[in-house]
Length: 171
Image 1 (cartoon, rainbow, N blue to C red):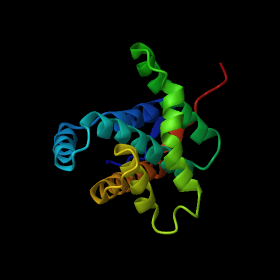
Image 2: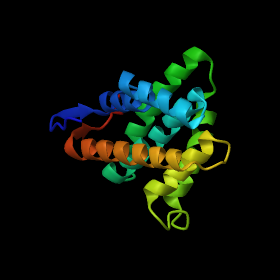
Image 3: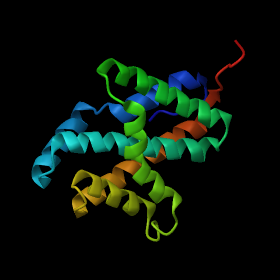
């Protein structure tokens, strides 16, 4: 990820982060399709769960990089607005589903008892359970933990490096 020191709007960054959460590159899609076949995991379920894992990584990176305040709230709101517009076109109850599906990741992040090992492993374990109806799979634990950690790190570095312009609420 290229880091920039230019001033960027919250809306622009929220759009880029939404894409990072929802859009797989062709190489990612090919690799994950093959992995789903190898592990015997439903491709659609793996892809769907990956969106929730990525959303959780971006949310944690935003809170840790920006602090829990107006700038972070603006960014989170911008991401949700973009998702709601996309979901509205398809008739999906986005708000309820995203909150329900990201909750297990948020619980692991906020509960020190659940992360007595590494956060990466704890998140990977949740990912594995969500992909397999509760049957942990070591390969999925590793995949989920690695993908969460990599995206978290990239987003955190980006948010630390840019000059994020708050949304102007004086209209």
